[in-house]
Length: 195
Image (cartoon, rainbow, N blue to C red; front, top):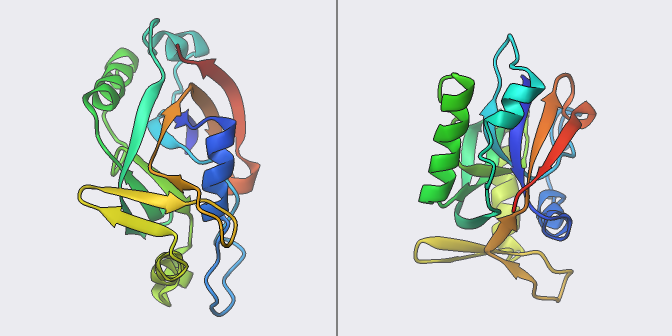
């Protein structure tokens, strides 16, 4: 994939989401490629080759960009490794405007499928063919982790017997991440604080 721009939650909200992301269904064994560990994020842009310079990437982010409120619409089962099971994020005007602004400034096509979303897990196609993506989703449902209401969803990020419901967060940073090779080897090249 190369370089990508991510909108990320705060460290505290990332830790809360990781509790959901670390859940595993009681199922047959899966391949090593499924369920890699990764930072929760919304992919704002995937940068094509040749990659724009760091100066141009930084210039694509508005100077006075404020931290963005992120709210969850639904938990969905996808049909692609990078969208195996994900949180569909409410596409606010601010999120859409930032998405369009970055792509226009970098002169790259809008190519971020299902924008905006936050993947909860990555499951390879071989395991998906045996129903692993659906099993993961149902494991969350069966554990009482998902609470849907009209037009939104909350996730219980608490320990067993504890309630810690999360339906939204502020995204305080944009990260430039190098996404090459196995998921667990991806690296963050720069963190940009938002106002």
